[in-house]
Length: 118
Image 1 (cartoon, rainbow, N blue to C red):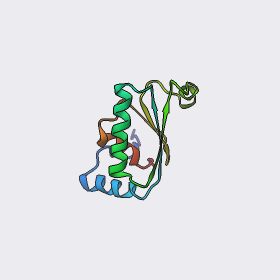
Image 2: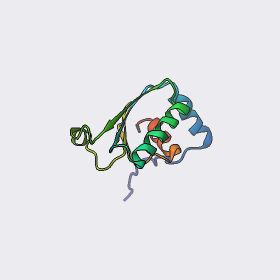
Image 3: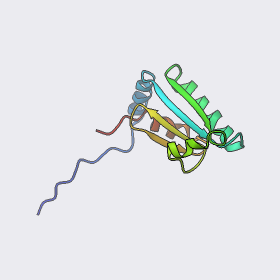
């Protein structure tokens, strides 16, 4: 009995493919929401790291909204958050979430710019 397997999906990019995605990202407009819990060190680091990443790689092609869940507690349920800080890429689809101080800028950038699987 032969089984029909779906084609394998590629999980790692070559350096050329990665640079191509970054170049394509410069043409796309991104809508990002960063949910933080006050002004503590973890929240501050997330804001700094995300601002740096956006300025370096997405300059002129992003909208960033920082939402303090202490001041807007209803945002937790609306965004279905389980932790803070959390970055939510709202647009373009697919919606993706990143939790933590966003210090791994290479992973965050790849997650933001990676197109939807077809």
